[in-house]
Image (cartoon, rainbow, N blue to C red; front, top):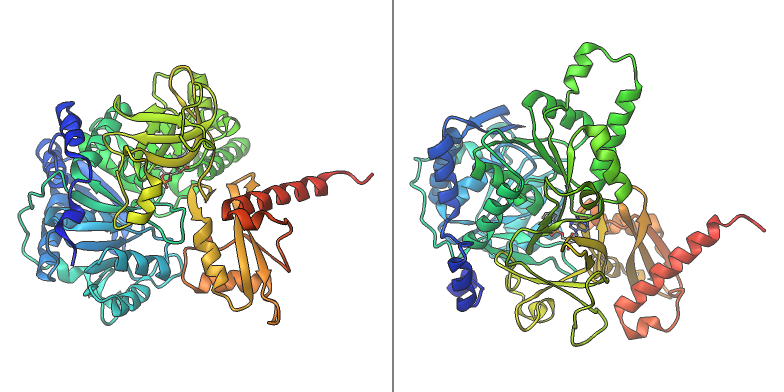
Length: 574
Ligand code: OOB
């Protein structure tokens, strides 16, 4: 089904040779990473969390044993090395058991977010020719297993829906994890480290999300280097707050960086301050990774706790955050004001992280001066990360002078050279010489730190969750009462941006109500964060002419129109 070379190293051979010679690509594979951790830290705690079987606490040896059994279990179900398996799980400890099971088998996880719904999961399964979907019974008031079973019915190669749930909660047609756990353990595979290890998802800028092929060599280089930059040791305890499958949580330095260092990963079942403060105190968490709105919520919760004088000794112990040395904030811009409140409120040092699932990750460093940590998004992991800041309006993409804002292009030892099965999109997303067009507007400081100032890509960053304008517009336009739709971002104090959909009603049919349109998008089975925050139905777009030039110009004009409207509203009556 898959031409074998689709999963081959996508880097030009001479480039791959250079990255090996420089010592970035070491030939380490995912199974090697786990084997190394087991050999050096076997009896140390590796995973803490709560799933369908209650609280779990596994050492590296135990995680390895479980993963080998699941590798055997997947193999018995007919999953083979090189096969793709959609992993659609919340932050339960079994997530790591499953993912490591697949890695040890040599199968390729395709990472979906727990917030994704049928339309996204179906697309991932189809696009990757997945042979199985692994999910939970229910999560977040949604029946994940039932949705996965519907996908399996329609998408031919999907043979199995593996349900991470107690047997009594596994629906008919699904395979309980218990069944896979009955298998004989399997010796780890020895995958070619230059080949693709998994497919990560992209926030997307087009109608359909893209899949990102990452090799063992490139990804694990970023993991080892990130662990070093962030100073991880066997004593590090990482709190996974954002979805485990997100690139930030997984590898910056995240769950995998902690594995490399021999530290412990704690999976937070919910990102709220109460849950996370309790886990930080109980487990001695040293580092956590969050998006700006969560950092703001934690800061506010802490400031409120401080102002309540009547707390008991037990309450204070439960909120002891003194172990938390580092709070990483990324996924969206952390404004200077929020940045300045983090240290005083939480007692942790802020680390800004500007990364992307396509590769490039920037960090502020522990020994950076405060103004760098507060006002920049850090600098790249690798000396061989190439960053070009170019004039976005120049067809020749000439670089702007240092310090000026331009569009960021990047190339390097862990940045992809193309999306999976997306030849047409790749032709515009990458330059002829292999630079990825990030779509971000940035400036570089004199020291080479990156300051993110906006974006050129058609994507809305809703508190770190990425919404592709075109994807949502396509859903809206599927409604019979909709002639045209344009989705734009509106500034939001909490999220950074929220979404506003302009909808042109189709003449001659009943005009749909905004609430009905929001429900319509939700019912098409998309992640809740993609459902427009506001829908405005009009007879024609309130800006003229621009629609004929490009969607981009139309969205920009509509966003400007909204901004104008809101300033007008705020003006006092004359
Ligand atoms: C991370 O990855 P993605 O793939 O969900 O999103 C990447 C995009 C970037 O291109 C940029 O537009 C935005 O998210 N972004 C930021 C940012 N971090 C990410 N914009 C401003 N400031 C930041 N600090 O979001 C991601 C992947 C790895 C590590 C951290 C974040």
